[in-house]
Amino acid sequence: MRVNPTETERLNAAAADAADEEVRQVADVAALYEAEAPRLWRFFRRRTASPDEAEDLVHETFTRALGQGPRTRVRNPGGYLTRIAQNLLRDRAKIARRRSADLHVSADPDLPAGTDPVHLLEVRNMLDRLEVVMLELPETTREVFMAHRLEGLTYTEIAGRTGLTVKQVEKAIARAMVALDRGLGPR
Image (cartoon, rainbow, N blue to C red; front, top):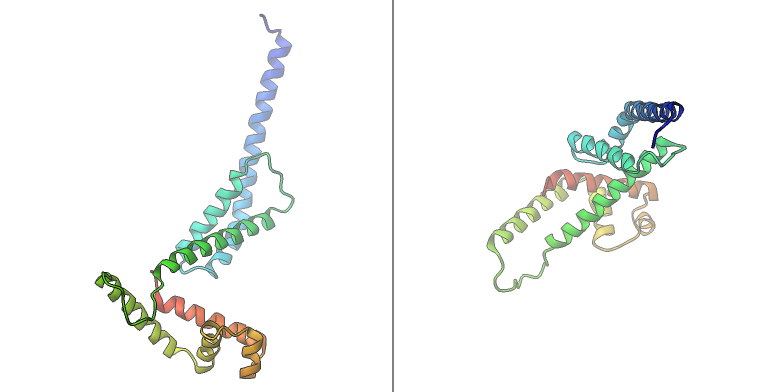
């Protein structure tokens, strides 16, 4: 089968158009990264323990977004990236919850036979650090946190008990969580 010259020219033009489109997409991604990466880094930095972790999450956000491929047209790329970032944090929180369930230790003094002594020492060390951090909290913050976490009171109930506003209760619990996270350090 012989291809006529016009068909060849048409194929070459189509290939050139595809290459131009790919170059435009790469330029668009680079511009989007340059525009959105600093904002996403700040978003993650406020919610993570280290700048390196925030940087990794920014890259993961773009990796997920680009994993959708060029077939997906997004009207609001910034909002789309923010949604991906929020989902990444949710995924990480779910994983952390699953892992922390494995670290749970009963307060029962009667320990089952065959308990690993190294694990017991680690748990006692963690409980000692927890106690130190809790004692360093301001009294109101500690009271609000313990009422919510230990007694299971709602923010409204705590606000009624302490005379604080619900917003102040939320902030006190958030401050306590940040202090605990910093005080207990990496696991």
